[in-house]
Image (cartoon, rainbow, N blue to C red; front, side, top):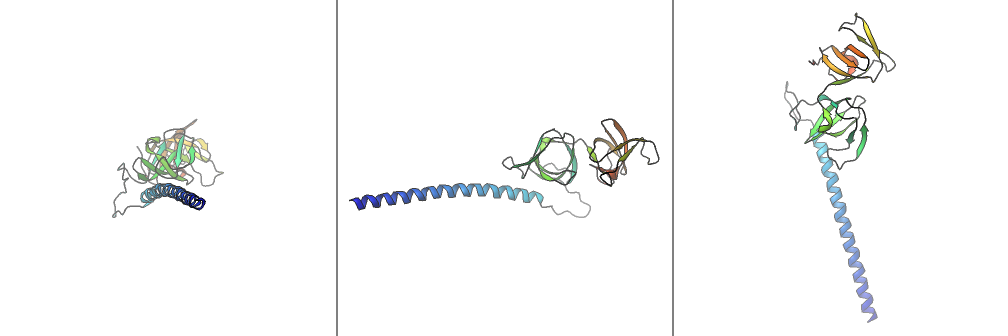
Length: 202
């Protein structure tokens, strides 16, 4: 009788252990599938589509050009590892109006790159179509001149250091009209990050 009782207990323990193991296995599978799905979404968004000569790449969600410059709408923008809210927040931007470049789209998410090359995913409503730019001198220690007109022989109205943020009013393809705190004038287009070479903005 004692042996039968011991045998019953052994079977019960084994059964409970197997049930626990199966539950943990299901949980691990679910977590793995979720992570794999997020990875697939991110990878799919990163794969550039094939375009013929002269064609312009456009976003699958917005139909707008890819890549393109936009700016941050808020002074607090979470940047995530992948295109969904379950992905970890890698860092937080705290500088509204900072220019960023959209490099990919997935549904309501946009993969962005900042002027220092960092990339991550943000929700589309945190971005604005308003154009801005960051000053980028040839050497980080240099000051970039701001001219009264789009002429390098004209009057210099300000000199800006690397990283200064300004609003883009227009660009001719070689010069941009930029304004910010205590400055307003023209800057050579190659000395900003936020507009493409030869891009015209009205």
